Image 1 (cartoon, rainbow, N blue to C red):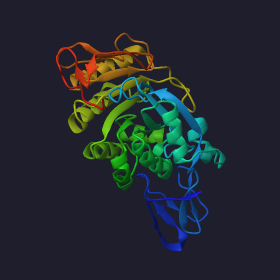
Image 2 (image 1 turned 60 degrees about the vertical axis):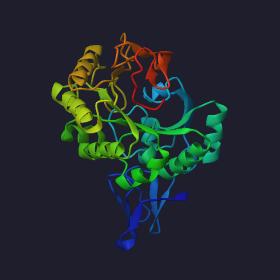
Image 3 (image 1 turned 90 degrees about the vertical axis):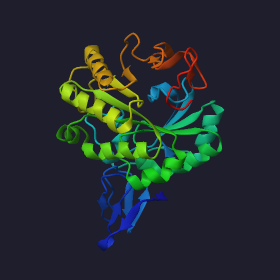
Length: 336
């Protein structure tokens, strides 16, 4: 148990948690909607600090991050808990565990342990992922500071609901993030995630303002967000407010958790989304969770050559030198 950051006292022993954009009011003995922050006698505590539920070495492309140290390894870490309750969560066994069972699980692992593990496995970064890094903010923050000191980069894979204050606090230590943008209809977004679309859009704007490299992922779900209006809305938002160089990953959905009534996403829907993205001005639109020729490759905007060839979420070949196309010297945006 570790005293939390970003909260304020309220009358009757209650506290308001200001870590994410839900700003939960938590009574004594109760927990926030994430299930891992508890009010104990008027003080808010994190119940997951130093308790890792998952540690895996992944290619950075699996996050997915295609413009961050291509071909490198990243140590992926997580705790239980999440502030979203997505009907299609792929990691519900750990993200929803505290809420559904009111139990905290995990293996003791200090920030120093995680950094040492990353270095031992020749990782170039640590990714805070699988559940939601916001809800284990204190743990992620302390690890990120030590990771930076050891020459590692730090990555969030996030639902994009971190509060402005918390994001500004970790921004000096956070190098990149992949942010899920799960749709572009407020009511549908609330129905599937339990959260506000407007809050996610504001958070994305904050990432851009703070200078953190971002890539956006949309899981394209039949009958939920695969209509042209939503896909074009997402693409135009990214191009217009985040920048044409921000990569957009459109990924295939497969039935899981509480969303078993929808079919898997056809490849044609992802191809349509990619076409819409390019029409909207995006330079880098990638297909995920499917095998489609060229769907994972990065083309140079300068000369059209394939500069990063990928397959199965792994880098196959690179024609970049110091972040520039070897053919025409075009500087690829990202972290290289």
